[in-house]
Amino acid sequence: MRSCFFGDAVFWDLRLRIDVSQQSPSMGGLPSEDQLMQILLVTEEELLAELIAFRLELLGHSVEIKADSEQMLRSLQDSTYSLLILDTQLPDTNTRDSLSKVRSRWSKDILPILMISMDQSLELVELAFRCGADDYLLAPFDPQAMQNKLEKLLNGRRLVSKLN
Image 1: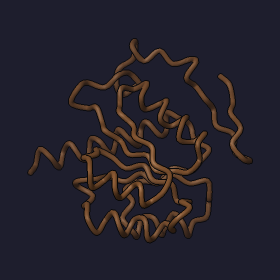
Image 2: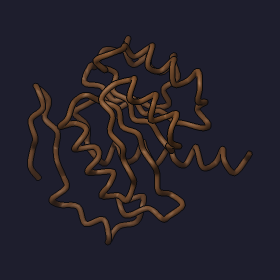
Image 3: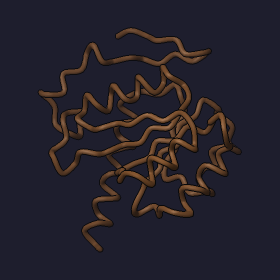
Image 4: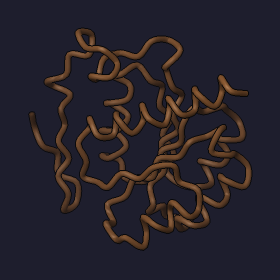
C-alpha cells in the first residue's frame, strides 16, 4: 500500500494490492454486465479524480471526469449516467447551486448523487442532503467505503427500475 499526498489529506492508493478477478462483486470483484455503471465524476482536484476513476475503472465501470458545473451540465444533457459523483468544492458554483441544477432536471430515481468533500463541517453535509444528495463521502476515504456506497446507490437504482 502506498500513500498519495493531496493537500493536507492522505489518500491510500490500494491499486497495487487489488486482484479483483478473484473476488465477488460485494468484496470488490468485477461487477456483472448488468451492474456496470456509466459514472460522471465532477471535481477540479486532479489527483482525487485520478484515484477515484482508477478504482472505478478497475471495477469495470466507465468514468467521465469533468472539472466544473458547466461541463457537468453539458455532459448530463448529452449522455445517460448511472451515477453522479460530485465534489462540494467546484470553482464555478457552490454546493447548493450544483445540486439544485441537477435535481431540477434529474430525480433521485434517475440519477443518484454521491457527494465527496474534504470539508468535514456538519452544515455542508446537511446542506448536501437537503439539496438532493443521496449519500456523502468525506475525503480522505477508504476506497472500499466508496465502493460500498456506490453499490448501495446502484442497488437502489436497480430496484426502482424493476418497480417501474
